[in-house]
Image (cartoon, rainbow, N blue to C red; front, top):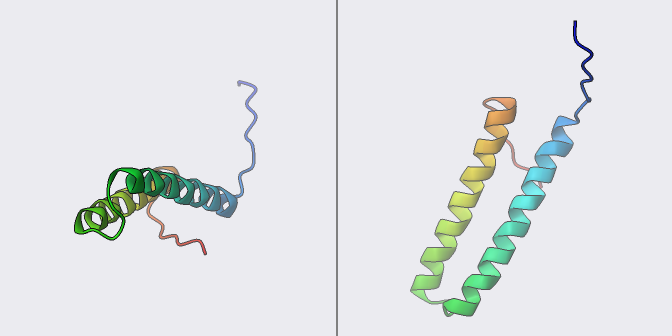
Length: 75
């Protein structure tokens, strides 16, 4: 038998942490996008939608890989 230490995880805190990191990444990406594309333009809105949709999908995929098929929305 091997000596293994398993650290207790607070699942909700972990999900909240992933969501916080996701929101921070989205904000940074959108700020950078504003430097390249005029805010309010059709092109900006299209890029904004893709960035938000895909980064949220990615965060959900990470949670799904770690915890299985659960729904989460942290407010």
